[in-house]
Image (cartoon, rainbow, N blue to C red; front, side, top):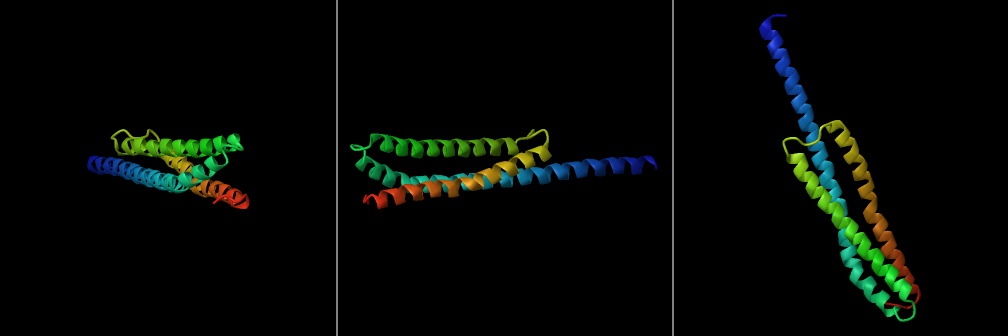
Length: 143
């Protein structure tokens, strides 16, 4: 192999590596955005349900203060967790866009895929809890 062919081969290898890293970076950015979307859905569910559930819970606060406290605590905790996760996606966005990014993009893709799968389970879970609270209030005559 002559010198020029050798140089061109090295350039090609570097180009392939850069393209692979760029593809992984784009995949991680997409997964991060999907996590943010799922967390946003959970926040929307909580924003819609929290005032209603807190109002209903306050109606039973005199008779059963522990139930009122537990419902308010659950809603506040879930909202705080979702806000923390949303902030984490914003921090990740900056890290992904940065020059250094992640040292191992393949591992980052795997980690973000797992995080995406976990995040996709949050809105249905929150909705099911809200529905159970609603059903319990309806069964007991609270509207």
